[in-house]
Image (tube, rainbow, N blue to C red):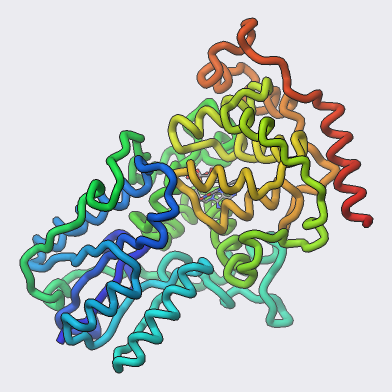
Length: 431
Ligand code: FAD
């Protein structure tokens, strides 16, 4: 008999909660990864860099497991079909995995759990991708927080008391199922090709994190950790990072709390995926001009800080947080385009795309979310540039034609757009 450990967004061996417990409680643990057809079918770009990254990481895990005398079974298909097949092939005792809080993942896991139950197999899931999940941070009335600041206070108190220990595999390797390595489907076999986009290094850059609060707002400098993609796919352990962050920089730790706050909000409010967190904001009559949207996507709005951000995103799969706020504000307020359009575009392009943070970030900018930017506050691209890219270094890097006749005129006047946005929001909210 074997037990399965199912890798998903936790692509590492060290300090992996579900894997640790599988090896502690079972013998013959067989690791599994599924390239989920339901997800892959939705990827528009056949050179999707995130898929290349996942493929590389699973190959790396495969090599590490080979050294331990075992392998990882890698399948391509829908999880339910793959599990049916596995249950026909192997005598399975238990299935271990780490919890995932997104609506699709919750449904998927429920279906596998039911299937397992019908065969007398236990489905055991563990907290791994966050420090605190679901209902672990509650207010005095036992409800989850809808506002960040009080949430973060309780989070911090609990974190400092928690005395978190990292989980090491140590001598547990012997509890893996002994096998020769398995073949793995290639990207081409799944209809994709490898991307050349560079993935940020997996490193905790201590000197950078130490001064994070002073440098994080300036897009021209390398002042943020670029660990987003590693947090997204679990190539870094959040426990390890949070423990280090706590000793290095409070502002950085605070950003990790934002990540968990949005995950918790999505867990309790799966409807935010396509609805405003504050329902009254679903009445805004968006202008939704396709032509305007295209200019924004292409970085041709005539607002250089906006254009620089969009071009950075299109070229590298990354955009600095300060600029994400500026371009999101511009799309929703200056152009009155539905935040869901921008959210979907980011979802396609960002290497660090995380449903909960992306949705949270967009709803914040559009003013529809939890701790929203009030609708009457509209980012002024010029004064943002003055504050955060005074020497125009970032702009010049991404918009070299800025200041020449080739560069387009602003597609809409700031003052006009600002007043139009405030009027539109005000009307919609009072109706
Ligand atoms: P650092 O500044 O080094 O921060 C470290 C980590 O903390 C990040 O990797 C991330 O996991 C977390 N973090 C930082 N800021 C935030 C935040 N505001 N909200 C939630 N988590 C945060 N972040 C994503 O991870 N995925 C997204 O899809 C995403 N979409 C966004 C969309 C918009 C419109 C906005 C305004 C923000 C979005 N963010 C998103 C948040 C933030 O911009 C990125 O996390 C950050 O820029 C990633 O760069 P970094 O890894 O260098 O982060």
